[in-house]
Length: 193
Image 1: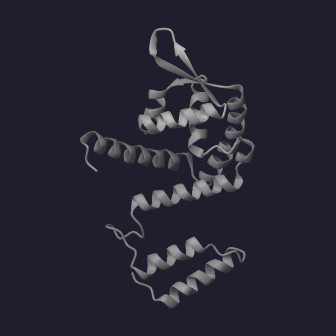
Image 2: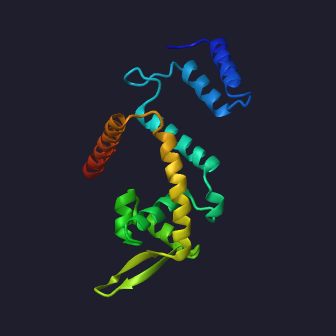
Image 3: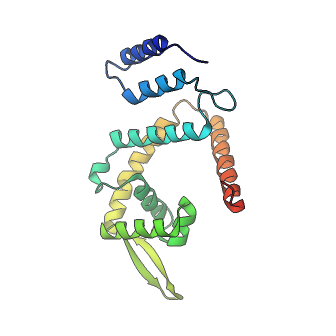
């Protein structure tokens, strides 16, 4: 469906008024782009799934930036926080391979993150007695304090994201997420992009 530019301008003006006189240029630009190009995907929806998931990811990151207490935690990125959280929830230690698998990241990316967090005093690597090649990654006292703050932020974000959903709807939604992940995992195994 193609909307006339005047119609898009009217939508932008309505959005401006609804948002308490604080216009969000990125949203207006998205509306303009979407409506002026026809903006439908393969199945007639306004955006494709990948684009919508990316938009949700960006919206969640903006929410976290605005409402989290991350200034108290040494300017860690969300990804760094998730790694600390994963290690904390799994007894305070993990191996690099565990992190690579859990977050779907490459060995080199994981190594860089571990080195960065080690420099910030959040992690330390310890040798393992049964295999000299392995290094166990453990959290420091500083990272455990950070984890407590992250838990509070995480609970608040989760409450915001799931507001208005029934437990049954959340089960269905998480099932869809699992199917999307399985599709991507299958493609990676087949080396099909």
